[in-house]
Length: 249
Image 1 (cartoon, one colour):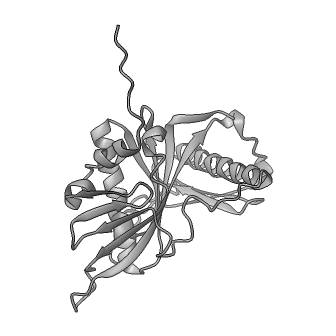
Image 2 (image 1 turned 180 degrees about the vertical axis):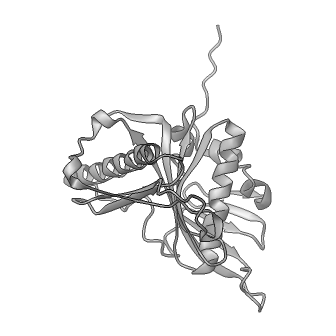
Image 3 (image 1 turned 135 degrees about the vertical axis):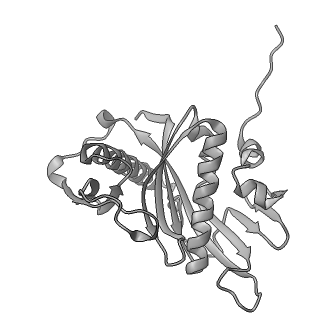
C-alpha cells in the first residue's frame, strides 16, 4: 500500500492529569505548529475539543511538507510533563501525560470505503472558547460505522472542503488499523501509537523544574525546554534521523 511521506495527520490527546494534561496538549500542538513553520510546512487545524482553561482534550491537524512523515515518525507515543500547573496553588510539581499519533495520509484509491458505511453530519465551526464563528453549518463530522472511527474537520469554509479533509483522516486511521491487524496475524502485536496514556508508559519526559527533556528510547537529554517548546525541535528530530552519507566524487 502506498502512503504519502509528504502528508500526515497529527492527533494529540490529553491523558492522565486532568486540566494540566489538556494544557500540555495545547503546548505540544503549538510546538508542532511552530516547528512546521520553521520547516516551511503547511499546518492545518482540522478539529479540537477545548478544556475549560483553553487546553486541548483532543486536537487533530494536518501537516503537509517535504518528507514530513520521515521527520515526525518518531514522535508517536506518550509524552510526559513534570511541572507546577497553573491550577496548583501549593507550588507542587505534578506529572501529566499526553498521547501523540502521527498517521501518514493514504491515497483514496488505496483504501476502499463503502459510502453506505459512512454517517455524515454537519455543524457550525467554532473558535477558541467554543463560540460559533460561522452561521452556516460548514464543518463536517464523519462516522465510519464498521470501525466506530469518528473524525471531524472545521478547517475549510465549505462543506466539500471539510468532507475531503475528514475523509483523509478516516483513510489514515483505517490504514493504521490495517497495519495493526497484519501485525497481530504475524504474531507481532504491539500497542497503539498513542498507548493508554498511563504515566508509566512514556517515550519522552519534559521536566520543567530541571529545564530538561529526556527521550527514554535513546537515553538522550536536551536542555532549554522553552526554546524547544517554541518550535526548536530540530535537535531532537536530528537524533532520530539517519546520518547523511557524503560520498567523494
